[in-house]
Amino acid sequence: MAGLEDLYREIVLDHYKNPRNRGQLEAPPAIRAEGLNPLCGDEVVVFVELSGDTISDIKIGGQGCSISQASASMMSAAVKGKTLRELRDLTHAFKALLSIHDHDHDGEETFDHPEVELGELEALRGTVKFPSRIKCATLSWNTLEQAVVEARTGA
Ligand code: ZN
Image (cartoon, rainbow, N blue to C red; front, side, top):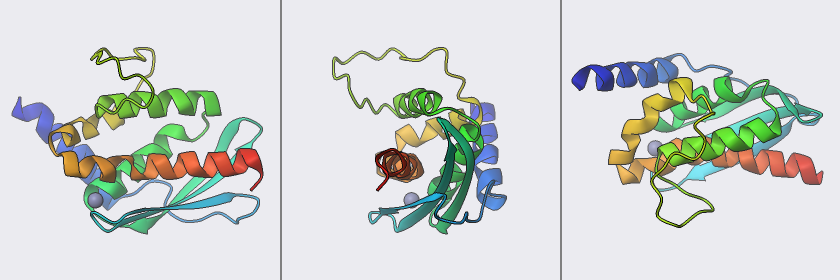
């Protein structure tokens, strides 16, 4: 199965070298949140703009390892234009891909959201084999979640 792993590696590398939605937004009106992963030295800055319940724009800043930065780039491409409800499902599905289960601890291995299309995010599946890198892959997602919570509470 080296073929699929090679393809995944290429997708991750492409996002690392050519990050999507790189930059910043004026905050406010955008919300800015910062995430750190001290274990690896990764830093991700997320700027997100909501219009109603929809992520109308997102920009990513920061620096760190290829997994953290590629994951942030892939996330930005995946969530732009999505509603917060879709974002929640996507976040859940992505974490399930990495064997992280936020709410259910019943030991079920089944994929919770078969209706969620992960697309290129599937390329991070291999991270599961390197538990120390899972925090790299989820850093941007947790940072976005933090930004959305701030936006909702008007903090
Ligand atoms: Zn890292």
